[in-house]
Amino acid sequence: MAQLGLAEKPPRELTGRMVLFIILAFFGVVVGVNVVMARFAVSTFGGVETESSYKAGLAFRSEEEAAAQQATRGWYVEADVASQGLERHVVLIVRDAAGKPLSGLEVTGRLFHPTDARGVRGPVRGIA
Image 1 (tube, helix red, strand yellow):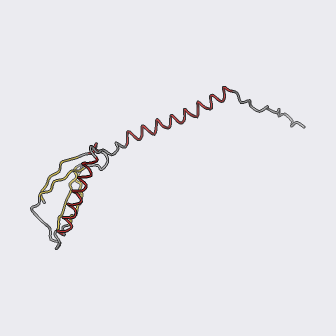
Image 2 (image 1 turned 180 degrees about the vertical axis):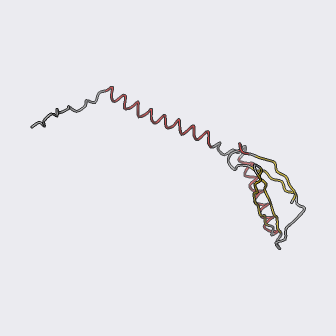
Image 3 (image 1 turned 90 degrees about the vertical axis):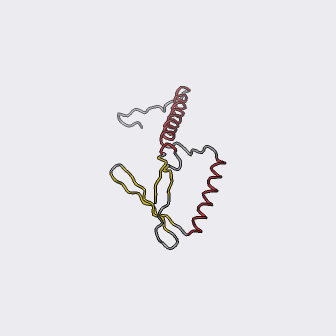
């Protein structure tokens, strides 16, 4: 028994042309998402920049030795960043094992982003 006023529609036939459009649409979406994600990845993160992993390993070893020497001295460093308008000042307080501030030290440093060399600001020098 047919319902009043409603004609039954035959199911849509799946043709070769329709399959082609479905496949093209699928791969178009995949390629489009890949292009967008690659663009975001390249424009927002420069990646880790290491000229020579061997030299970086040697530098790490020397930094480890320097940290061990500082630990034997009993020195510790307090660092603070102070802002005045657009300027930023890094304040370092170096104390000996007894907790007394050390003076007359020459401080040399470099401010950098650990993974992106585009943000390097340096060298920085000062007297403690």
